[in-house]
Length: 309
Image (tube, rainbow, N blue to C red):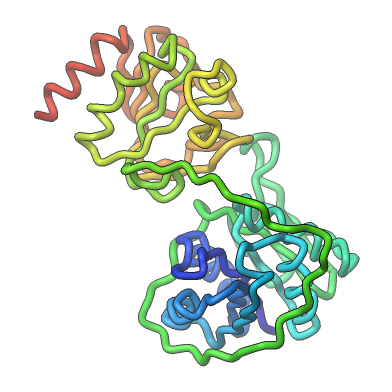
């Protein structure tokens, strides 16, 4: 019994989500192999070989794999699938784009967003926006899985796995990479940040989100938002935290002007410490908050910044 982890990377380095997925794979039992499929991806493969618990790193290096196009990466996974009992990817946009293609072509059911491994064939995953946990048992010969990164600790470094080159599959020719526009920020990546400051509809406007910047600066935090704030056009889509946005579990999550719709709670309620600031004492966000402040955010946030010095 051996598990294959599809590494998420940018050819030069691994994304943190890969480390969480390796932990999930290790809990499935047996050896863990990591597939690094990309172009000029030797540095990412080297990083993968240093993950503790990884027995082997498979490298498929070709120009048409460089941009992580799901159609090509899925074919690469399928070329190797016969050797594995479990195939795992992080439950990120990258992983979610690849695994359904793999599962469909293997004619197996995908097991999505697992947060716990009970046995090699039994997994737990949240349903109903995280209000219930489903226990799923699979009899499929190959388990195709996405792992929610907030459900598993990141694997440690310090390993020394063998690195093996595998034959890259041919370009499917179905898609072509045109361009990529990346949002640039000096702040930490939202899903990897230890502190997140999020604003909601209560901020009133995109201009008012600037009130949160000094607080985020003091705490070295990433900035997020509720779907209501994103839908209102206050901030970009990639700030969205929630069931249909990014799932985060930082050490500290500060929710400002967020009422706490169930979809938002599903994306942040696993945070270690939650602080809520809202003028409505009955707001649902207070049901998950460790600390709550009822009051006007436009007065309270500057006071917090002042107290932080």
